[in-house]
Image 1: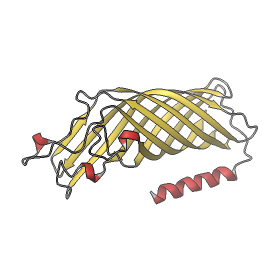
Image 2 (image 1 turned 180 degrees about the vertical axis):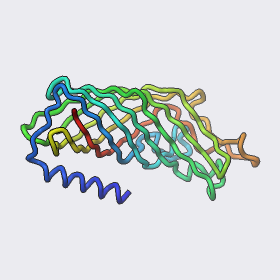
Image 3 (image 1 turned 90 degrees about the vertical axis):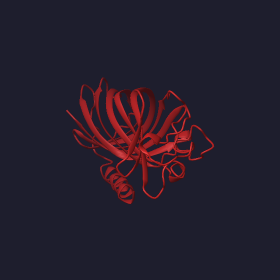
Image 4 (image 1 turned 30 degrees about the vertical axis):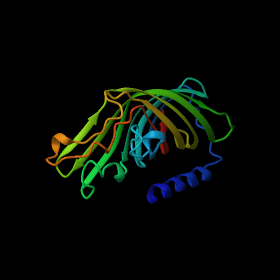
Amino acid sequence: MRKLLLSTVTLAAVMCTFIDARAFDVKDKFMVLALGGLGIPVADFADDESSNNKAGGAKVGFSAGVAAEYGFTEQFLLGTRFAYHRFGVEPILLNDVISPSGAEARWTVVEFMGLYCKYLVKTGGGTRPYGRTGIFLGKPKLTVEEGTPEWSGKYDLSLGLEVAMGITQAVADNVQLGLEGRFAHLITNPSQPGTSITASHRQTRPVSPAGVRDPGGNIDWLAASAYLSYGF
């Protein structure tokens, strides 16, 4: 966590150093991006109250992805992305399922076929703020394990919506650095909303009906990311 925050501060300092660099003209250009940062669960997805049958109990994790964009004008771009997000699970939601001494659990969300529109604000310099919005298909998964036994709760592909704001800085004619904040909303529909995940078929001792739960509705998270973009 500290290394990631230090890297973010360093990137911001580098962006300020190049504040007078010439803006990269994105019109009729392709850009490829690599990004990574923190994944921050919110709403029911982050709730660890066992009384909430939609609680996901997810903890702060990481996000990483790649994207490709094409600039139709100097301000409007269309892009596609693939991303992977991984979150831990609060121990309080494991205590009634598996002995907390050796139990581990994790949420993962894989984004497929994300499509978005992006708008760059004209500034006359090398620093340009932007906003973007889009849709994606996401596949969440919850894995509970204790040593070798493992249980995975799988979902079908679900529709997701996203909105993001960021700032990009040209550091060369075809290279940009950027910082971005993003909110993602994945619409999930488990076959049995709110039911407990107990991994009972993999355990030899009785388990409680309370514990790590499938969220009965949606999965929401924030992503704070830094990225590198190359255009051609």
